[in-house]
Structure formats: C-alpha cells, structure tokens
Image (tube, rainbow, N blue to C red; front, side, top):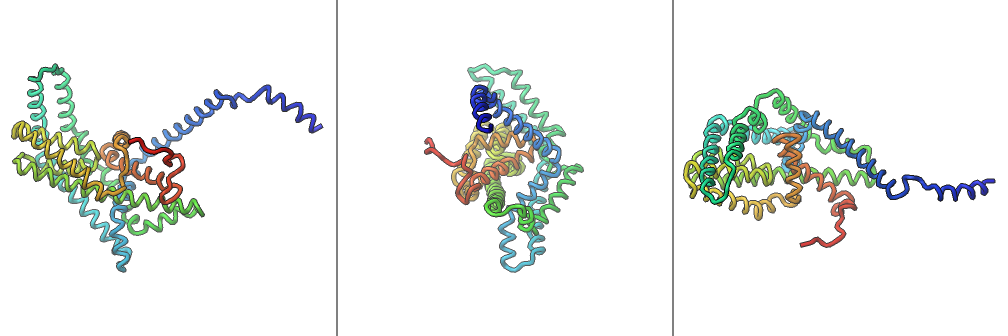
Length: 373
C-alpha cells in the first residue's frame, strides 16, 4: 500500500509544482526576505536614534579608550597598578578634551561674529567678480544661497549642532558624564568586559570574536591617533601660512581647520573655502589665491605622505564609501554623527576582512578577479 501511495502521489507533485519553486516564486521569496531585512534595519536604526544620548557617549568612550590602549598597555607592562594607569589615561583624555573645548570657546566667543562677517563679505566680493564673467549667473539664486548660509552660521541651531562640545545644555552634560564614566571602565576593565561578553562563544566563533575585538580596537585607535596628528599638522601648516600672509583671524581659522579635519574630505574643503573668503575680503584676490594654494598643498602633503604613515591601514575605505558614511552619520547624529561615522564604517570593513581568519575576509568579500586598474 505504501508503494502504491508513493507511486500515485509522485506524478501528481510533478504535474502540480509548488508556486514558490518556479522563477517568479523564487523572486517573490527574495523580495519577502529583503523586505524583512529592511524592516529589521529600520527598527534598529530607529532604536539607535532614540538611544542617541547613550549611544554617542559610549562610542566616543570606545574611540578614546582605543586611542589610549597603547598607553595603558605600556603602563601595565611597567608594573603600574591598573587603577593608577586608568587615572593617568583618563586625566590625559580630559586634558585634551578641555584644551579643544577651550580653543573652540575662545574662537567662538571672541571672534566668531567677525569671522562670519568676513566670510559673508568675501562671498559678496567673489560674487562681484563672477558678475564680470561672460557667463550668466542667476543673481537671485546666489543671494538666496548666501542668505541661507549666513543665516545658518549665525543661528542658534548651528551653535547647538556644530558646537555641541561647548554648549552647556543638559543633554551635553549628561552625555559628558556618561562618557567619562564609561571611559573609566573601558580603560580599567576593557579586556575583562570583552571577555565577559564572549562567554557564550566557543571554538571558531570565540576565535572570530577575539579577532573582531582586536581589529576594532586597532582600527579605532589608529584612526583617532592618526586623525588627531593629521588635524594638528593641517592646522599648524595652514595657520603659519595665514600668519605669514597677515590674514586676519588666522588663529580662529587654524582652530576651525583642526576641528574640521576630523571630518574626512568635506572638512578640509570647507575650512579652505572659509580661509580663502576671509583672505579675499581682507587682503585681496592674490592673497586669497595663495591661501587656496597653501590649503591644497597642505592637503596633498597630508593625503599622500602623512596620512598613510600615521594611519596605516586603519582607514582603507573608498572615497565614495566615506562620503556615504558622512551623509548617513550627519543625518542620524549631526556633527558628532559625521565625526564618528567614518571610523564606524572602517570598523565594519575591518571586521569583514578578518571574519574567517587574520588575513581571510568573509567569503562574499574575497577577491575572485584581478582588480581593474
């Protein structure tokens, strides 16, 4: 009887195949899977946005802890007690943050209005030069762009967004206290905390998690240290050039160059434009062109020589990926989101590269063809 049943049902299944087994059915299945993944992604992103006050301080604490990890290892290797080493590293972080905050406060409170006015006047002067060109430019559109930019720079929204590091809002104080507390425990018990989180993993999964942790710390630490060195070199180089050319507001412009250098690609361009506009209205077009040349020269030296040395392989991302990460980070977290978006993307790519081994990326990302040059 069993044989008879199997013999009679087999032809029926062949004559009436499942609607999910043909090409359209497989396409529908993939669409349902993609929609499910997108739905989960939307929920996760929404949750992260709602927890931004917690997430951003924790990410900043992780970046600072990774940056000071070599110092912690050096102190511990010399027999310094863990608590004392943590206090030394934490005080160093707070001193650096305090110095940066003081520079920003000084630049904003003392000369920010003058800087905005000079940049606006420089834009007006540049607009007058464009008016004599043989091409037609919509004057109303230019005026609208200028009014929008000036209004944004002088608005309280810009002050609370771009200068969140110096604002005295309740959110900032809460985030700062949380970051300091989390940073203390990351510095003191970082390896223990990570080992505790890895308790569910064994075997290959445990080794993979160890590689992911090491890669994350190396990437974040290398990025933070390298970016700080590059930002300092950019600020010093451009600041010296502005001082030699006797451009007013040279020190505030150098501070802005330092801060914007933490936003790859976009930051250096914005700082260069601002410095050139100030030089245009105060020193004339020749000096403005020299300032542009100095900015381009410093950025080229930094990008081709300094950055590969001080950052190594901590930021091996294509420029398009960086721009997309910056856009997403800015939308989700404002200026702070733009700053932490690129190292986060670098960590994600670093995890992919060590997924199956120290130098063995995840199979979908393994190179299957020679690169096109």
